[in-house]
Length: 527
Image (cartoon, rainbow, N blue to C red; front, side, top):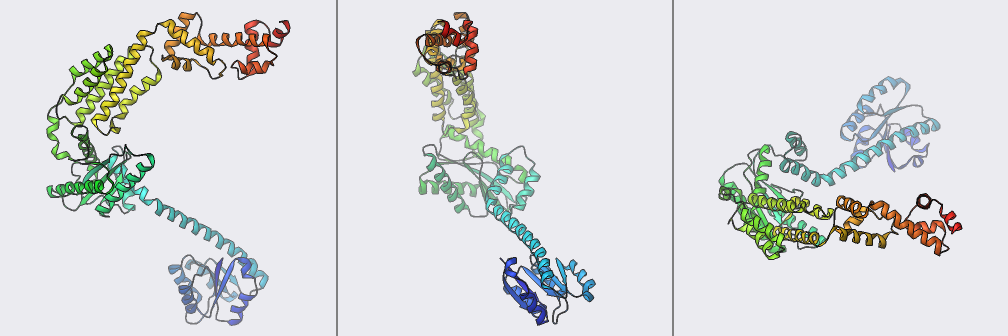
């Protein structure tokens, strides 16, 4: 519902306009009356008003002066001028003052009502537009924290981005990264032991503790890997600021541990003296964080203290040789020992060195796997996925365990290949077909998975050992089963089709005639 204000110094007109039409039917719930522009302005400043009908010539403040003030102070109010013929040209000039329309006096009830219907339609449209804009502004305000985090993440964590574009966006969100110096830190939480529900709860709690500790002066956001990134801002640069941030991270880590018993590993990168250096600082903090693999988690690592780790680089040649030997002879203890020594025989090594050793082991294992022709797609996927797993491990012990499991699986695959001849595989597949021929989805892929071999290997082996391909063999089995059912049961043709693995009875009939030279109905009659 809307509110209306009628401003006219003539009581007859003022009250007449109020009474001659049904304002409630047009959506107005309240009507104010004013004798002049000043009184109208006072009412408007104390009450919500949607529409103003005002005369031009009034004492103290005329209608045009009122319109000009309303255009500045209350631009959302819809202003309509009431004017006589002698003031018409004068009224037309009022449009430049924000007046939306004008109505000529004398005013008849019917003409006024028609005119107000048109004006109210515009008022409805404007009101809906204002509501929409207001709704969008509210949504934007509600989304602002997420948008701020996304923008910070793009500026700090992404190498390939238009830095100037995102800095401009950040400025519009009241994030000014163009001035000052920043220390960049990463908080990595040990959340693996928690259930999915508790995982989110503890991550949220850790972020809140960090925000409460640092306050609004510094920026905090996630980097997309459930890690918290801190931009610690200072107007001055130097060793003191770096040391202050280190002490701050130590305090945050202790607070998180004491409050919610969540182990947290922190890392500090190099100082960023401009927005362009933020990504480099972030990457150096990630590099420092990798020390958790060699030196342990639940600590604070500073990139400035890690140069000594880069002076030596260890390659586990002997350990890799022993690992492969252990796989081939089936010695799980030797497999475990070789993997463990690969990461520890070189003493204290950097996170980069640990990653290189990990990749070398995965590559060596896949090389051994490639020599086994009867390997399932599932095992290959596991092996290739290992390349992507490194960042997800919380410790060296975790990645050692995963490599050990994969190496043992390769060992099992080798033993399986040695124990099974080609005919044993075929026999296993044929038995699988006899047990599952009723399944319309039965395929070479399913059979290969059952036999723990690849599709390509099974296809060639089946042709070689059986003299026919897998699809032909499956069709023959289904045809013989359907012949048996036609001879021994009263089942209808379409029922036999479904019973023998055909989802389409028409296709079954075509296949049957191709196999026997007769349709199923002819065969049943002849038989």
